[in-house]
Length: 454
Image 1 (cartoon, one colour):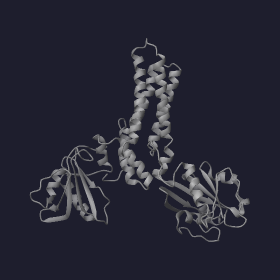
Image 2 (cartoon, one colour):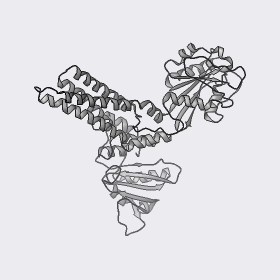
Image 3 (tube, helix red, strand yellow):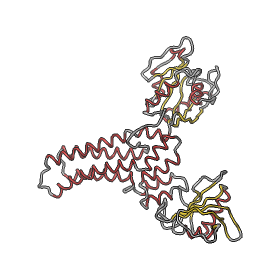
Image 4 (tube, helix red, strand yellow):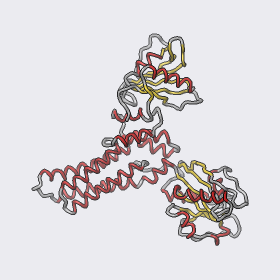
C-alpha cells in the first residue's frame, strides 16, 4: 500500500526526444526541495502559489538545466498537498539528474498511480474519477476520451449516488419497523418500498446495459477475418484499412500466418486480424497457420467469415457454426462484382461486398456497428454515463441481485433483519465503485495500472 507521509517525485511526462519534460513533486518537502536546487532569474523572487517562474536548476557550480518551475500550495493542487512541477528539457539525462538530486535530498520515487492515489485519499476525487484519469491517459479514440472525461467530471458518481439514495430510503423504512416491530407496515410505506426498489432496478439495469458498448469503446473491437483460401480475406483487410497491408495473389494459401492491424473506424478503435485460409492441408506450415487462425476465435469480439459469392454452393452454415461457436459472426459474401455471384443462405447475418471495388463496405461497417450498438459515424449521445469497467458492471449486477432478493423478501413477508441485510450488502457494493468501502486489494489493483507520474 502507498504511504502518505513522505514526499514523492516522478516524471509526469514521457521522457525522450522532445521539447519539454515535467518532473512532479508532492509532499511536505516540495517547496524546500525546489528552493534547494532552483535559482530564480530574479534574486528578489518570492514563491507565490501557481506562478510559473524562470530560472536554473542544479547545485552550486553545476547547472543541470534552464527550467520553468511552479509551486502549488496545498490544498489547491491535484493531490491537495504542496506540489512542485519543474519544466525542463526532455532529455533522459536531464530528467534523471533532476530526479536524482531531489531523491538525494529527501524525496522518493513515486510508485505507479501514487499521485492520483493521494488525490483520492485526500478527498479531491472519488474512485470513479481516479479511474477516469487512467482511462483518459490511455484513450485511443475520440469516443473513449469523451467517455473518460465525462466520468472524470462525475457523471458515474452522480448516478451511483442516486442508487445509494434509493437504498438509504428503503433501509430507513425497513429499519424503522425493526425498532417498532409491533407496528404494521401500512400500504403507503409498502408502496414506497416497491417504488424505490423499482427505480433502483430500472436505473441499475440501464447502466449495466451500457457495458458492452462502453467496454468496446475503451478497449477497442477485435475483429477476426476467417474463411477458406482465396475467398478475399486479405483483400478485405486491405479494404478495411485503406492501404495495402496484406499480400494478395490468386494463389490459394498466400497467408500462412496471421496479420494484426489497428485502425480507427469512425471514432472506434478496431483491431483486424487476417488469418490463413481454413482447409485441410498436408503442409505443416499451413497446418500451423490454420491452428493459429482457429485459436483466435474465442478471443475475438466478432468473426467476419468471408465467402466466395461465385462459389456459394461450397458454403456450409453448419460448418461455420462449428468453427465460431458462441462468438458473434457476420457472413461476408465477397466478389459481388464478378459474374455468377450469388448470396448464400445462412442463419447468421449476411452482407455482400466487393473487396476489389469497395462496393458494400459502408453496409458492412453499418452491420458491425448494429451488432454491437456502436455508432462508427459519430459520437454516441446518451444522458447516462457509459460503464467501461468490468468490475463496475459486476458490482451493479451484484447490487441488482440483492435488491431483487429484498423485493422477493418483502413479498414473502421475511423478517426485517433479513431484508436489511440485502440492502446493506448492496450499499457496501456500491461503495466499492466510488471508493468509500473499497478494500485495499481493489485499490492496489486499480492504482497499480497507472503509469508512473500520474
